[in-house]
Amino acid sequence: MIVRIVASLIVVSVLGSIADAARAADSKAGRKKAQMCAACHGIDGLSKMPMAPNIAGSPAMYLEKQMKAFRSEERKDETMNVVAKPLSDDDIADLAAWYSGLTVDVTLPN
Image 1 (cartoon, rainbow, N blue to C red):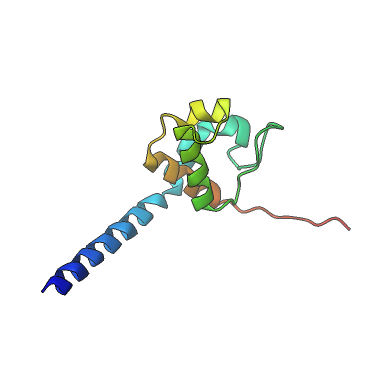
Image 2 (spheres, rainbow, N blue to C red):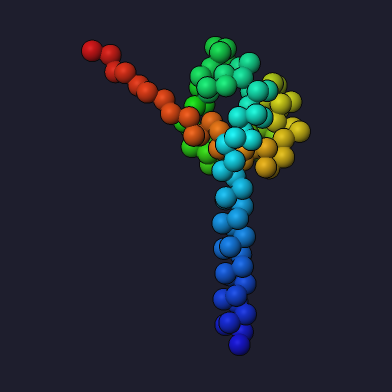
């Protein structure tokens, strides 16, 4: 009986995680929210400023971790700490979905 209860709890937990992951994939919402990022990172994820990194095509997990670190001020950057502070976890997931979904073509020099 206890094994069944534990198994049921695990299933519910996994299904909840899947639902959260599905929510995180809202790149259309991320594109709208990315307007605030565009001045530095560009709507296309290609930096418009020398001190801002290109983020197009970066893994969503990496982007989420970095934005959460800026939000909590675990990672320090004067601009990003201010920009990330009001973002919810859903906002961060949406932005990560948008920027990670962009593709970047690379041409190697001869």
